[in-house]
Length: 298
Image 1 (cartoon, rainbow, N blue to C red):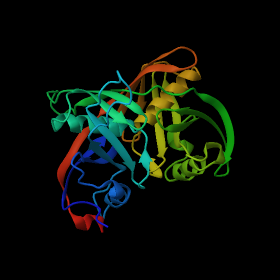
Image 2: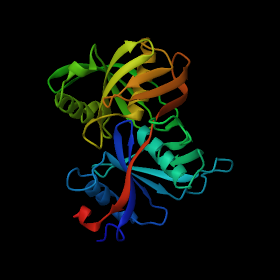
Image 3: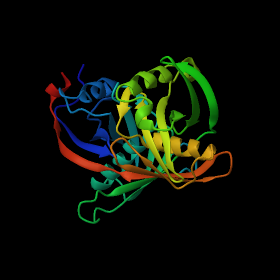
């Protein structure tokens, strides 16, 4: 079974520390039946390109109903393990900037995603020297926050707060996110929560979060599908800011300091129960361009 047709042009991008292989797949360079295996193989670090996931830019489907806005492209995200991700904030920012740079979409564009339409605004490349252009997304509306869920995982009794932000997230508030489960211990805790029956069958992403001040959080994330701690997570930043606001610990706008050291900016309106008009801003850095050779997929 052929995974792809010859050498595949790609762009390696980083969204505030989340790294992706981004591919213009409008011509079907990667056949639908090969996408999952292709992603699993190309995301391997050291023996292939290496990434948290693959972002595919594809032709948009016809609007589902009369009056629905027409998307500029279909954005598909596949996790490193080959599973589809309904939404990835940093991946969407990278996809939007890629599409803008390639002339596929304007700076203000509409992405068709598995979780609904997402609106993006790409900052022009004419920014002060040394600073990466940023992208701002208007996110799909989060679900209601479920607070004070208590469960046992990895030998710990944990209090969690859950919210759907295109994908499911669990948030653990702690005094210090960096010492809560240092190093690889976060992977152990995150994996146990991710597979806990309380979040079956889909599982959940897991964020350890501490409050720095009224408008600033520190966040570490175990990502479902990557099955590891990542350097940043856009939807995790939104989930953490929304949960922190629901608990009265912070108020929008909220800056979220990720493990990469880069900051994701989250803003929304809060009516006492739900967040509306959610926006997420961060950088979408182009790292390299090139071709994936067939031997990278062996």
